[in-house]
Image (cartoon, rainbow, N blue to C red; front, side, top):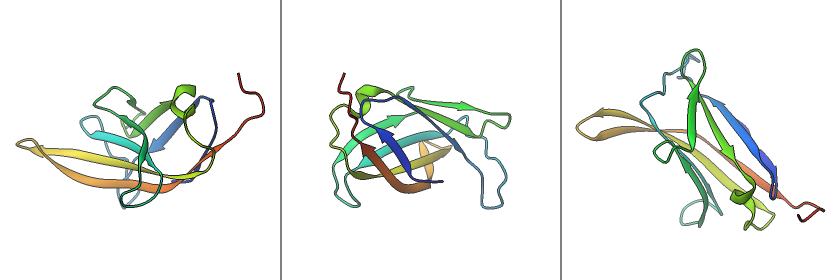
Length: 118
């Protein structure tokens, strides 16, 4: 996956294809998917979160392996333009309320300022 660049107070649809180590599409219909943006690794402050449990992540695609996350202008309205980090966590149910955890990616999340402030 790649770094994300967004202008402050803009909308952006993120699309991630989820595959296994052999590049075979994984059906993520039953997975719990969380997208988090933090100020830095470790104890960095969480500034944005979207999750499938909250209805913020949509699963699409022929193999049900594409997750779509809609960022709307309100998501970045209070963010200082700078570099952050994002992570996508995918958790598959294994029974008994337990989940197996997989980090889809961790990369840069760049918020840029705009000239028009409406």
